[in-house]
Image (tube, rainbow over all chains, first blue to last red; front, side, top):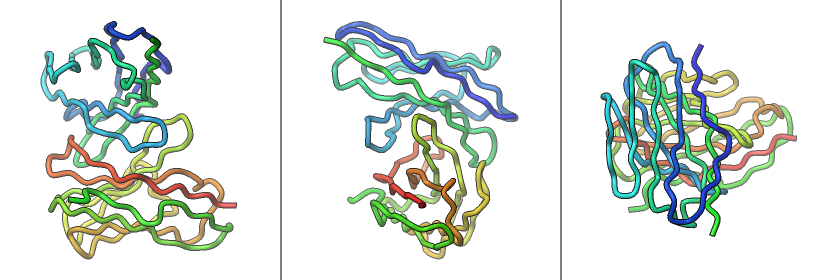
Length: 109
Length: 111
């Protein structure tokens, strides 16, 4: 079966660094994406990894290890506006995307 | 550019009724997708399209049909609504498949 696992909740303070993990078990693998979703809003694309290693985009970085079926999203210099849910997603073949259950990040002042 | 728009934003149906959700994008994207999101959960792919005139099943296609007669539009139909289809429906489009742009969502309640 297809499954992605993420922690359900993470809490951190403003200015801190937080890491959100994602492990996956899918029939195929063509890349790991990360999306952010504020309450009541639509998901927005953050980052993508097709190969092993770290991808950096401003305050956000994403890492992938295909041999471990594992990735993470790293958020630096946390701001209150980063409070949201974060989803990892795997393209497992064709245009079939499987999303994780999401991690709710709360940033405290 | 409006990006991805969805119509309607809210809808309440009775069990057994039918309806069509409309998704439109003005970015000339080839790929379009329909997802559903239940409370506190991730998105699940219903159907997708890789181009005008093409459609394919995703993870949870039962009870839904789709059509892509024009490149910019992707329609999702519910022929006989059931309470289990109460959800928020998101449409997305993409040029590069892993970078999807989502619409604002349609909140559907089936009573």
